[in-house]
Image (cartoon, rainbow, N blue to C red; front, side):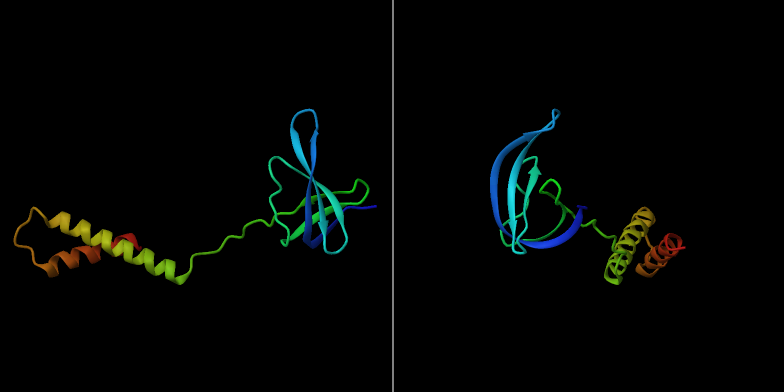
Length: 126
């Protein structure tokens, strides 16, 4: 029989002692599912899921074992809100840089400081 991937709701989790492969020792759990599967799972610590959780698992019928399949996180590109936030951070930083730039030159107007800040922003956003 071949390994298959399935999704099922956990109905029971029973500790079944330990198992060692010679290099590491694992906790063994007997896990029951709503679809009738009862499989042995290994874990380094406690079983990571709970009764009532839906999980995807690889089933090895030849050995009566299962392995939890974890979904790989997906990359989410920056949203418009994130971009707006980044733009505000750049604008604030460049305003601070312009104020610092003109700090020793007394007599500069607010308009001149803002013009310098805009030059800095344009430079950053090239």
